[in-house]
Length: 256
Image (cartoon, rainbow, N blue to C red; front, side):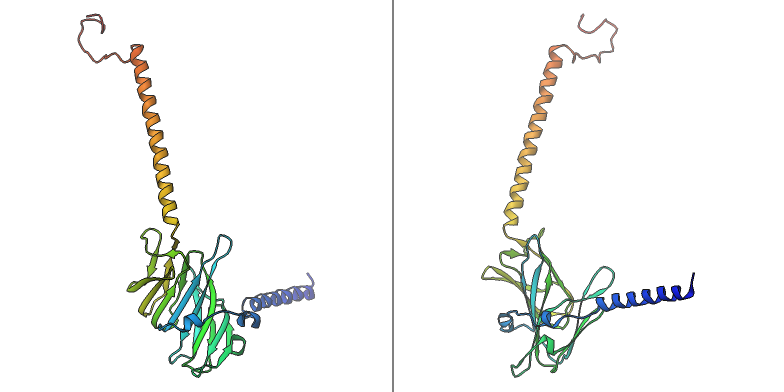
């Protein structure tokens, strides 16, 4: 093969790989960083970190909004852990408030997205950072990027309290319901938060399904038992169930 052709093919492969890597870590657009979001309700929280999860539907996942009071922290490394590795957290609607209340949009901050994390640098280590991200339909997992008190509000009409359908980690939390939204609070969190929640209507629907299965199963068993009795009666009618276990030599059964 012509050497020039080989070199050309190698060059194209290298450029393609470089373009792929650039696309993977190409960062987050200014439009996404500056997207509108409401954070006032979370900023009013007494917790160091306040998170609100908005429910998804059958087609799409939910979304969460988070506000972090940064005390002595001027950089956050945001990621999510998968089965094999850490992946950068996709964030949007980023806002930063200086201690004096001045707000800065996400596009004006130093935000870099690498292959394993999204790094956010803020101008003052005692300000407040807010951002939004994706949540599951009925699950939520997020590392504790900063230590401190946490408050997490799950979607309306959802709960975590049922043993079979809900789960909360870590332990040591308090639960309350405010305006039909369950709120979980921790005095101190230094490990990932993991939630599994369910619609309150899921419980009666599940119990109704179990009841229907039990009724249908009972009907099936009753029908089967009735068929057995009818078959036994027919066998007795034709003399097919005569006892033949007599070991005496007095002749065939039924002739004595």
